[in-house]
Each structure stands twice: as C-alpha cells, then as structure tokens.
Image 1: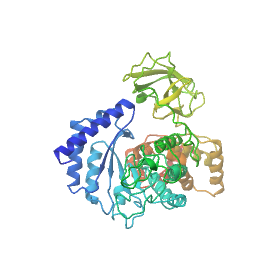
Image 2 (image 1 turned 180 degrees about the vertical axis):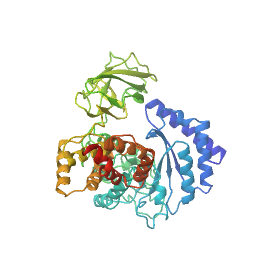
Image 3 (image 1 turned 135 degrees about the horizontal axis):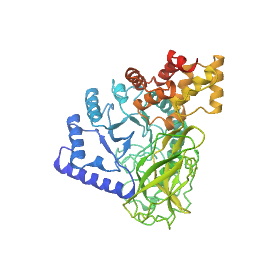
Image 4 (image 1 turned 90 degrees about the vertical axis):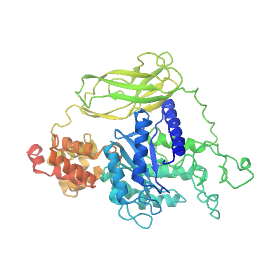
Length: 527
C-alpha cells in the first residue's frame, strides 16, 4: 500500500469489486491482513483507509457492508505469534476506527480465548474490543470426530464468552485442505473434502451450537486447496505437469461448482429457508438449475422507515425501498411484488403482498408505501419483506428484520412475584413477552428455590434465541432494552454507563438479575 504502482492496482480491484456489488446486489468490505507487513501498522492502515474513504469514496456506496448500522472493517492477524503488531499497535488502530464510526471485525488465532503457544500474550482484552471475532481454524480438524471435539472444546466456550460480552462470533468453515505444492513433502490431499461432507458437517454443527454467521475459507485460495469457486471436476482434465486435487480425488463425481452450491444451501439453512439438517440437502446428480436471464431477479435493500411502536389493531404506514439491481424491469403484469417474511407469507400486518408503485427499470429504486394494520394482540412482532415474482421465485435480499412493539411494551406485568420477574426478564433480555411454557417453567423453579434469578437471566442470555435475535445489538442498545424491559423506564446516565460496562465485561446477565432483584423493581412491580 506504500508503493504507488501497487496501490493503483489495488484501487482498480476495489473499483471493480464495488461496481460488481452495485450491479448484482452484493455487498463488499475492506479487510486488512497484516501478515508479513514490516511497515508501521498504524500509519499504513490509517493512511490507506483515509485514501479509500476520501479519494475513492467506498463508504458512500449503498453496497458497502454495514454491521450494527456502521461500515465494517476487518483486521486479520492480531495476536498471531508470526504476525506483526503489538497490543499498543492494535489499541491505537481500534481507537482510530472507533473515532471514524466504524464497526470492527478481527481475524484471530483459533485459541484466542484460552491463549497458549498459538497466541501472543496480553491480547484477550484487545480481541474483546472488536464487534465481531472470527477465529482462524483452517486445518484444525480433519474428520467428523475432530469437528465434534472442536465444537465442545473451543466453539461452545467461544460462543458463551462472546455472547456475554455483546460480541458477534463468526467461525470459519472450509471444504478441505492440501498444500503439497506450497510446501514440498507435505501430505497430498491432507484433509479430504469427502464430497462436501467435511464442509457440511461444519455448517450443521456450528449452526446447531448457536452460530448465526460463517466465514467461508476461501473463495479462491488455491495454494492451500481450500478454494470454493469452480475447480476441475475430473483428474483426467488436470495439467500433465504438477500434482493437483480435482473434485474426484475422493472417488466421487461432482460438478465443478459443487462447493458454491453447497455454500448456497448453507446460506439457506442459516436463513431458515430449509430445515437444519446433518445431511447434504442436494445431490451432485441433480441438474444445475438454469441461470436466470442476465440480470434478472436481482434486488437489493436500500432503506426502510418503520415505527418502533404501534397501537394494537390500529392502522399505520411504513415505507420500504428496494433497488432493481438486475437487468430486467419489474412490472406488475409480470407478477413482481414485495412479499412478507419472518415467516414467509405471513399476514401479521394485515398484508402479505405489496404492489409495485409502477414499472421499475434496472438500476432504479422502488419505494413501497405500506398501509398496514397492527395485530390486535399486544406483543413484539417481526417486520421483514422480500421481492418475488409470483409463481416463479423469491429473489434478492430481504429487508433487515425489525421488531415492532404492538402496544405499550413497558406496561407492568401481572401475576405472582415470580411470574412478574420472569415476564420482565423476557422483555429486557429477549425483547418479547414470555411464552406460556417458559413462564410456567421458570416461575415455578423460582418459587421452589431450585433456580435463582441469576440462573434464570443467564439461561435467557446464553440461549440460542438470544444469539439469533439479540446478539447483533450493541452493548448500548442492550443496556437500553434492559432498562425499558425490566424497569419500565429510560436509563439514567450513571446506570446506563454501568450497564454498558457490565455487558462489555461479560456480566450482562448478572446486571439484568441485579435490576430484577433491586428495591426499585420491587417498589414498582411487586407491591
């Protein structure tokens, strides 16, 4: 990045990536891999970022990836013994991006939390300053038993640690491994792909454990044999010179795009479009679905205006803007509409489809003005939409899910003291009303003394539901939700700061329990 010609080449790549993302409804972000960098890290990274923002304007693109509402930057390599960067370097760089209003993701060693030979000492507090942590685990497990051990010995503890601190967790998944050309004498086909079973086992087990995002390693890394993009399907088609792993290396006939298709199915499983399953849901013998017409059925989310609270049974208006990022116009005559999601085709808001405001040409935005009616039963409801062509397919991005309070979310709960504590705990921690089963289970255990309020709060905070629906919230957002859900009021400045600090320190559940056990709670709700 310090060399003019090298920077020009990287700038050209950046422009191409941006153009591709904008044309085809994808997203992009910047990653700084500090491996092998001998220059002063702070100066190099901050100078380059200013160039990308000020000169190339990358964050002005509506396709630049955002996390928790902020542009995302990834820094890969802090804490590895063979990579540069001290604790001081890392903290200076984090402080710089914080001041820039950036959300940060860290690519870290596999044992980042426990430490050891593979991690520089003193880096755990640094890692805990990032919004997203992604441990590098390529090569760490060779078979199904290894993956099971990785989940129990590493990943489960990592998930618990990050959830308690309001950090998102992005494990790495990889299809297989072989670097016998990169390192002569190493084992050829060291970690067999097993026709995709190695990759799918990770996708299934990690999601089953509660993971809500994945890092696919890698799209195009050929030297370590982890490439996910199209590769040679048959050994007979390999070059005569050299030794390479074709997709039939493990005795199976697979199409060249097999791993792209598996990643696509993994995405569908992650988005709950298909059921969580340990078995690969598609077959290599299935014909590849025909490609859509150039640019057809592409949609990108642009913006939405949704009230955070509505009155039960009352009408309200919301606005959703989608961009036609394909090459074919959307028309009502061709059946293009906006449809409800979470769950698909729901009628929660009195409307399952929204008509186009008019013909929408490629590259244009369409703003849907939705005249909706809130459910008559008070509660918290999901608001999400996606484009579709009737009788053909749903396509493109969904709108980000927004949870809307239907009715006064802070109305005092009623019932026994234990039921009141459970109801307010659900509101503050999970952001919803307690379901009948959870209310009966937890309140009876509290009444019998077999469960403490602290145990109850920890159970909600470390639940899969919390990981799926709440882990994307910042510590500040979580703190505000605890106050409104548990104490029924806005946070005072001192209490808010203490609560944010507790969440960052992994004591969010403890802080919630303190609120429920507080004299204020007893005076307001238990009299």
